[in-house]
Image (cartoon, rainbow, N blue to C red; front, top):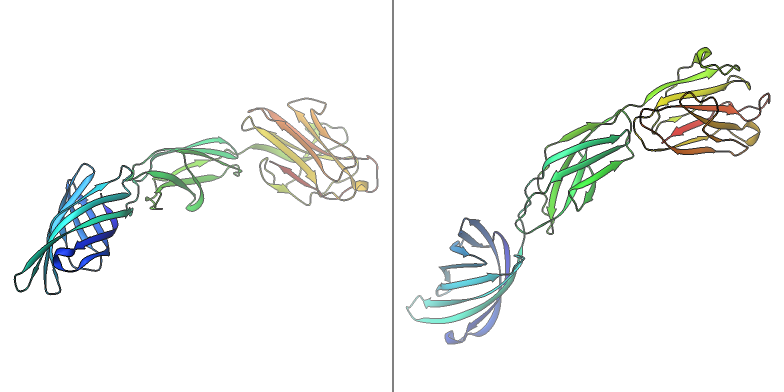
Length: 331
């Protein structure tokens, strides 16, 4: 029953010569077991009461101009969702001269929830691939109801979800990600953050890039130092030594997932490059994109543990207008 209660009270003070009128109050209610404490906002008053099922009641006296009002009884019945209530009270007013009169008050109102949910527990991080992590946790409790969860990654808000699990995708390989979860209710009261849980996306085993001589033998490859990763990193300004040579990038798939390889940024079709992908020790390309397009793309599903080799070749061997750089992305 704890919370902030806002009431509209229809007072019948006819017996006191004041007719009927409305008054409005806001009460701060705290609860300990079956006992409650009620404090009208803007006053130093405090009433004690009890909770019995979906009913709460309190009584007490307070000074008013020219006398004292005593609440003989006030009982409110709270709705099933805990957000509204109705009830009535009987009271007696005693003047400073000793005269008395009595009346009743009909009360309706709402509760503004100020209590946050408890903290989510058992946050679990499952690394699925070099670009995906799954999260799950145990639902907390709330005095009304939990309506959603906020996900924080590396201390920064990421997104909100309604269930007790979610997926984080588009991650970078060989990188640690740490998560926390909070719960919130319909009044936007947010819990504290859960215990942090971390996971590291696997690095993809990449060999190369290397320059292959015209005999196409891997054993004669001359390794060229260039940054490369098989997930999410762009290669730029890569020089092609001659029209007879081509570059290769060899890697081992860290998971069974779809991958898209895009070759671009090599200029006009007169400086065209082609894209080939070999699976394992195959001597012929399994996937390819070749022609005079300004962008070459292949998409296929990798098998975890399988090796793949990407080859970038000039479209026209022997041409004197070969691209001097390109961009290769693998996502």
